[in-house]
Length: 461
Image 1 (cartoon, rainbow, N blue to C red):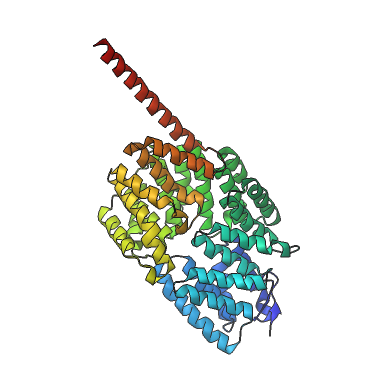
Image 2 (tube, rainbow, N blue to C red; image 1 turned 180 degrees about the vertical axis):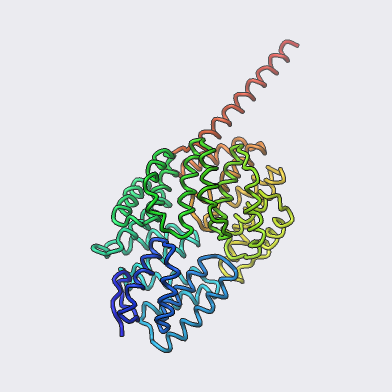
């Protein structure tokens, strides 16, 4: 029989006694709760004919961006199809199964589109809403994420999970440059759903993008309970706090958060590696010694460098290998990226195109070939959003481009890049931009002074 699940907004093919556990699964996915996997496994064990649970399991595995998880996702797909034969799923549930199949074919965009169809037909489906957001985020499509969220907003009055939708909407507003609206939506999201770490972190993104680091710290301080329940997403929120300290020049505080929170658990999840490597790289660009911290993430990244699942993951593994002086491993990873072909799926196409150019720039920068690094990175930045992640996460590559330009002598071009960065942030300057523009001004003043002295000497002769 089919019963209504409070948070899905649709009827699900699940006995009434399992609905509370399923609702915990949906809420857990919305709030990035650490307990979600255990709740999902409980539903799978107690309701083996519930195909939707297996489909969600498979999609979650693919979102992890780990090569060994593909086999687990394939198993989940087979289990979902078998369960569907025993207990026919409803049309929405079938959409989730189809989406998993599309992604396993190397077509994550088709998977997201299929789930969007489910959402269009069931605009109050919280699970479909969040899964669309998650997949499109990996694909680097904030405009699509925003349209999806805004398409269902009118249907969510009185919805028990409305706060989580507002959190998703807030993030998409920030990523598309609507900072004031994003700030308001994110704050309202946390007000309605105090456990909405995604909405809380969307507001942190606003403060990062608008150069208001101290306000960002004030926003996060005292709200730790909003992300304490999270899976490894909690490390990412701490990462945002470290970025704020970094922007204010409080490098010791940023390093302390690295040691005590960001790398509290030495995981090899690519998102955790991304937090670590991008923070260490930013610190080194500011001239801050980071000791032997590269070694730990380089060891882990060396073991994951053959995954080839996501460009975003590969690039952060590469940062770790370069930081840890693993030149052969870095060259091997870049070689693998060069071999990625679109015929092997959408993710491979992005690795071989967008990711590879960025990788070549990072390699050249590490070797001191700053002019080559600049040229590769400028080419990569034109379409780097396709690798996924947020503007804040990808900004480490923009900063490396700036440093390569400064060191390679591309002063005018680097100033243009900094101005492009300011324009993309709605005209706001952060501490990093101010420091680099001040440096450029001092270099130019010094050059003018040197030229003036040379001219005076020539005239006296």
